Amino acid sequence: MFACNYCNSQIDRMVPYRGGAADQSEFIKMAKVVGSDLDNFGCPICGSTDRERHLKQYLTELKIFKKSKMHVLHFAPEFKFLNFIKDLNPEIHVLADLYPNSPAVKSIDICNIPYGDESFDLVIANHILEHVADYRMALSEINRVLKRDGIALIQTPYSSKLCKTFEDAGIDSDTDKLYYYGQEDHARLFGSDIFDLYSDYLADGVIWHKDIFDESSNEFSVNLDEPLFLYRKKINFNSDLDSARVSNAVRSTERVSPLVSICCLTYMHEKYLVKALDSFLMQKTDFNFEIVVADDASNDATSEIVHHYERRFDNRIKFIRRDVNVGMHENLASALGACRGDYIAFCDGDDYWVDGNKIQKQFNFLAGNADFSLVYGSVQAIHDGRIDYSYRGGLERDCSQLELMCMPAINTLTTMFKNVFKVIPNEYYLSGSPDLFLWGYLGCFGAGKFMPDILPSIYNIHEGGVHSLKSDSEKLIMYLMSVYALYRLHKRLGHAEFSNYFFGLFRNGFERMSAVYGVTFGDRLIDNLKSKAQKYQIALHEF
Image 1: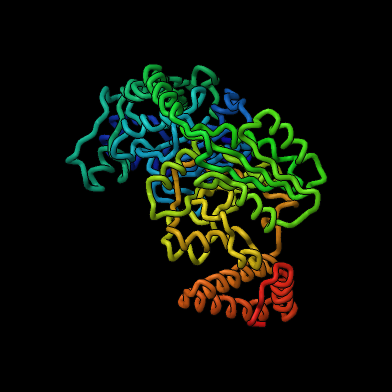
Image 2: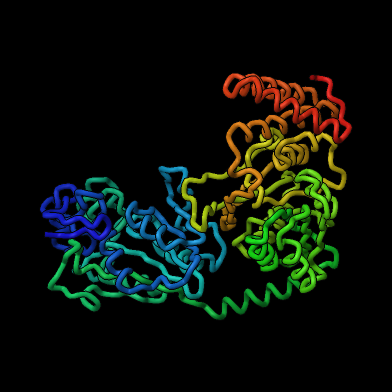
């Protein structure tokens, strides 16, 4: 009788993998591969594999995850073990695969990880390195992105009989790979030298089953010979010192006026603002930047928090505080007008950044690529203090200038853009979603670039959010108002093709919305536009 430590079921017999150990090739049998227990592989109730059960057994016993809010990079996430990691409530959990089969998983090559040095507390790459073309490069990349106290879990099958890892370029057919490597998509069979090979790139921390568990019992039906491939970062101090010297030399060339302005809107953000401001101040740059905070008459402790930071960092923080609520459009317009930088990075006060090199990377790209007006990245949504794995966020690819003019959904808190907002077009005030209008307007000045090498920024979903918890009909009204605003912009600028496109988009959307939600929603849309037009003295000729 066995047990499953995922579904807590009592099981007579586990499900074998393929035909079990008896169906292995003679070579694999001779090699005595340590990895999965092919005869007792899957739980018939929940589908957990023996290696997932073994990992949970190891990690539950060792209690190595004591750090809260971990940053996790997880390659080829196993379904049950993925849920185990989710329960640890990480702050960042990047799911990765070379060929993703889900929108939740990012396309990342383990041999060329896009993120910066020392980005992750935990890297998980179980049963990956036997597949990759260059495992040495993969190990080097894992070590690079690990934080100084980080951990890598890299379970890998290996032969306990072969002294040397076996790899032959002539073994290139599925039949031969299955015979010699044990699986059609494996690139090698590691030998018992695997621990030395891995230790060339990472600090060894392998733990053996027999050293912590009673081998007379195997309640979870795991391979008792499989160790925990637990490795830590190997630190090259000379390299670190060289990097520090370069960084200090570059910073000495700062100009006095800011090259980048961080624009932050706040309203009732006392619960979140400290994290936002800290994430701005932690940015490591070789240029001067400023932080412009515009608060729209919050009646909580938001202004007190900003004043506290303003006193501590008076040369860096500019605070615009209103006594009367003016709304998001006017608050953003005043903040953009106060930004002195050549580029503006945007983040509301209820969100925050994780990557300390975010604005440096974005500035480097924009300063070196005149054909682009906007750069942006990915987000991780937090709801009630935990990652919302169902949230997909905005665009995660480059977009052409034409596409950008059509105002795609972009993760606002991740953006940096050219400062073309010294004078804001009057049509901006007709839009329902100011950020969408800004993307469309920025399209007049260049294309958009997605930057996958920046860690996801944190998007907080909460009741006070401007957009996240609005109904679909309300979001549609805001979108169509922005479409209309861009129609009016391009009409004034004489861009006939674009004005016709946006007017057609508005008209069709209006008709669909009225059909789906009823005539009253169409009336609300028109009333909202008329109200804004009257407030800002903009003539409407279409209604």
